[in-house]
Amino acid sequence: MLSKKMSKAMNHQVNRELYSAYLYLSMAAYFRSINLNGFANWMEIQCQEEMTHAQKFYQFIDERGEKVVLEAIEAPPHTWKTPLQVFEETFKHEQHVTSLINNLVKLAQTENDYASHSFLQWFVNEQVEEESTADDIVQQLKLVGNQGQGLFMLDRELGQRVFTMPSQSD
Ligand code: FEO
Image 1 (cartoon, protein in one colour):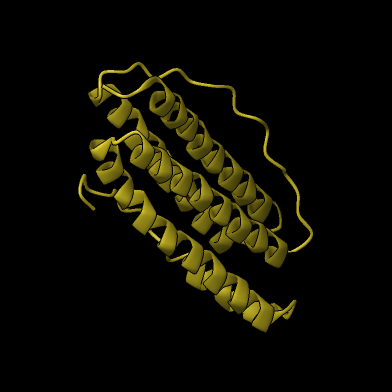
Image 2 (spheres, rainbow, N blue to C red):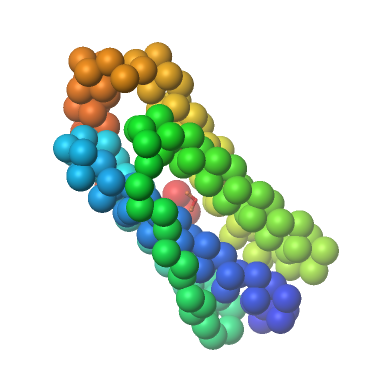
């Protein structure tokens, strides 16, 4: 069984992961609207990944004998000035998600909930990757600036990203 506090916090994390999916889908739509379809592809896959994060929490809450209660998801922003601004926001958002995961880990510790603590380690590691990938793209965009050819090359590179379903232990 999850404690009431833990259950509430995990339910809220389902919502935050779904919001992340919503945010990245909105960013994908922005990139489609300015014909940067490789950037859009990257964001669409990011959206799919966030859905799997939400599903992991959903399954875990159910496995621990609690009911998932979905909360409202707010509308994400829908327009940005530049690709750089989008990725700076992505990086900032992932840092925020890391802080939410860290808070869940702290709660699991104070509640002596070893199963939740163990479950959350996957997310601790995932956030390292999430932040690093977003920051890499920020740095690349800073190098490229608004130069057409560099942006075109980066668009092609980001267009290669494919979705892979994370395994249970992955
Ligand atoms: Fe589910 Fe990008 O953190």
